[in-house]
Structure formats: structure tokens, C-alpha cells
Image (cartoon, rainbow, N blue to C red):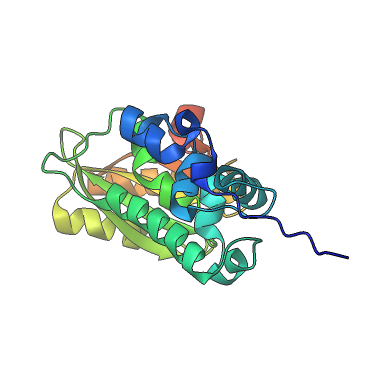
Length: 234
């Protein structure tokens, strides 16, 4: 009995109008889906799946780009059609995207809403596997002076030292700050401890003449503003 071999599916096997690279060149990268962008990195598929379908499978398997960002390298390598080279390409591309978000343009970003603040940090913070607490230091015009990590671990009123949260603002002479921390579970619903620690921050800020503009909780693809919900700020 003759063994039947199945050829690899390559991007060039797609019709030209459907090829991700050609679409990127003619229309720009912003029109491509995440699966198509991954397909450009992979270049070839596997028997029964073209590169775009492999990209779709990876996104479904890991829960989107944030999941791919969080996934251990060793686990990504084990996926069908993904060896060390392709896993490294995917991880490198995601890391470049993360670093791009951290690059500081000549004009400092301005915070006009909770969404503005969340957009600065949620790409990276939604992928963290434990709780991190950071502060966005702002000037009098709500320009971001710096983003500083001040705590790592369970965020609760008994463990977080309030003085540590304000130390970067005192050093930089920042008149206001926004507190941000993540929930590794993916659910950004504030806990009673989140509300309690927010209340402590707000009270301490009044004594130090440093305004706490908000406390954001970052989850998987979502965030919650405690200020908008009136939690800890009343």
C-alpha cells in the first residue's frame, strides 16, 4: 500500500488577493487580522491548514494575543507546526510590540480619561502572572512624567505600604498620580481590599497634597476605574 503524503500549505498557495503579505503591502498592516499577521511570521502551514489557519488555531488555543504573550516558550513550541524557530519569531514580534508601547515620544502622553491611562499599561499588565502595582506620575497638565512599579504581590491594605506608593511622586515633584494594578485572573472587578487600599491612598494623598486621580484594575481585555464607580473616593 502506497503511503499518501500531504504537502505543506504555503502562503503562495493562496490566491494572490488573499495572501497576507500582498494585502499588507497594498493595504497596510492595520487591515490584516491577527491571524494573518501571525501567518506572515510562520510563512508555511501544516498538512490540512494554511498559515492563516494555523494562526487562527494559535489564537484560539491561547486566548488571543495576550494569551500568546503569556504562554511559556516551551508550551508554544509543542503546538502542531510550531517549532523553536517559529515560536521564537512569534515571541520576538510580540516583545517588539510591547517595547514600542513603552517608547516615550518627544511629546509626553496626556491623560484625559481612564481609558487613556489604561491604554498605556494594559497590553503588558494583562499578561502578568502575578499582581503588580504601578503609578502613573502626572504633571499639572496631566502629562505622564513616568510610570513606576512600586509593588509586586497581593494588593491589599495590610501589605501595601502607602508611603511606597507616594515616594516616586515626592521625588519627582508630581502633583498627581494614577494607581494601576492587575488581576491575573483576568476579572478586573475590584475586591474589598482594592477599595480599602484606594481609600487609604486618597486619604494619604490629601495629607501630602498629591491628588489620586484614579485607581485602575486591569483584567483580560477589560479594566475598571474605581473613581468612575465611586469606590474608595467618596
